[in-house]
Length: 411
Image (cartoon, rainbow, N blue to C red; front, side, top):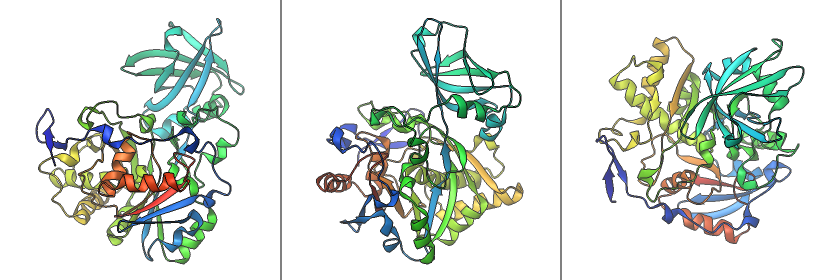
């Protein structure tokens, strides 16, 4: 495989032309709404290079006994707010991640003001000053503070101390369904664009692989002694960002917050070799744990804010030699020393062809956009056979993208 060295040295990344990860996706193959019930969606199974199909309700037939399924329990927030200027111009503010306070739980509990990193639509029409709108017994204002590239810091203030920022979003915000659905958010999306196990508010996009799960599916998995664990990764808008550079080396991956419980790390060690990630966000979180464990081997008392996996960390020449369970044990040791139940970190990891998977043995995932980092991740997992899988799905009438059908991929 051809490799190229990134500026800064120490990292060799595969020379990948993004045009090699393009495919024809007719608009009519994009699912605009989910099936009902959720678990009646199609399920493509890829194992040992062979493809079969079923329905998602029968997932338990394919997951081996005593395996571990890991879910992302994040919950999508009503991150999109529309403000109207006296002139009639509409300004869209899309909340990406909190800045002050930076903690998700704290920012949603604020009762007077907070600052978010945002995208701003129709920004040219916002020429300073505050925008305001009525919001369930309060007046909410937005003030544009500063810009950093495509994103902007916005201060929100409201005049009712009995209401939290979570209340403000609930009253003023709109659930941000994916732009490729090419339609407005409908009332039904408030339920169908959340997994039934979503708990922790913070995402601006759903971990869509989990949208197929129902209580019936969970019961059938438990009857087969399949363990279920959760982690949290707050999905950012970058998940929809296409790769626009000619080669992958020119793409800047988005950074996302994630957290994993100590009990989950213990299960990952116990179930080594039988770990199935539900969705690409779970994959990125689980694989990031390995590199966190490597960091801790070199610097056990590293500051919490330094627990961040960089985009090309997996490509470092001195990385990847440690056994996965040793890396996970380093995390357990840190949590025990800190008397903490949860690891909190950030990841910018980009998983692409040539990547050596450390933790994940199987993936449950939907069918992703052409030229996307998600498709690159899938290609890495199936050792370049992604086109066989996608050609089969297209020919057999599978539905694509967020509200579409699902696949189960074995390493």
